Image (cartoon, rainbow, N blue to C red; front, side, top):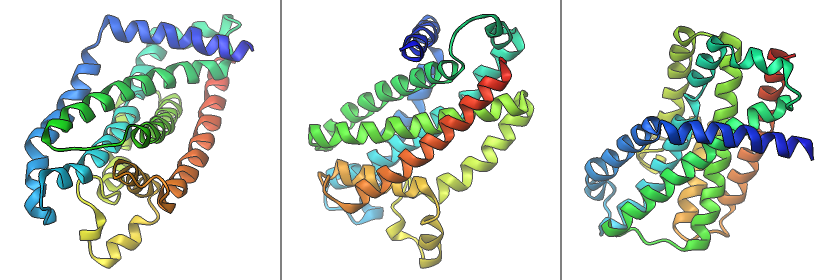
Length: 251
């Protein structure tokens, strides 16, 4: 189908640009590595864990969700640069699918995230992390959907505001409460009741619980399919909205 071919063309072009200048890919992995080496060891006494493996089993999934959310939420800055350079404007005269303009870019972000997720997982194994390959692959699918969701939102918002000065504070304002109520760095079982109740309205809190369950080998847990349904639904809505924004921008 034409949309698949167009999506592949956009993805290939965007991925080539990423490989030519992999600075952002490297920068994106440095901070999670610091968290892995310098923050995770503090969790063993904080969580009352008996071994490092137990602490990393809790921390690594949350770290990967944080990487998926924040790595994708700020991709809109690159799109604003393309808008300023006239790249999106020149797309008006091409027959490429408007939906593919979004999906090609977002799939590049998903591949980038998955590379980083695999690297973080491998680096955590010497610290005692033990995972089942099948369960981790399911977790990576969920992480990929989270990346697609946040990437689509970021591109859609970037097309609306068209300014880094407006996009940066907007994303920071939204991302901070998401981070603090998702139980990313510390599980919300340690939180007071009111904060746990608030977190139930945060879809990424469900995602964190789902990824943690998969890393713990509990693929049959109800939270896994519940988080999957929530993220799939939100991703579909985000892609639909962002694709319409692309269509209006290059119409």
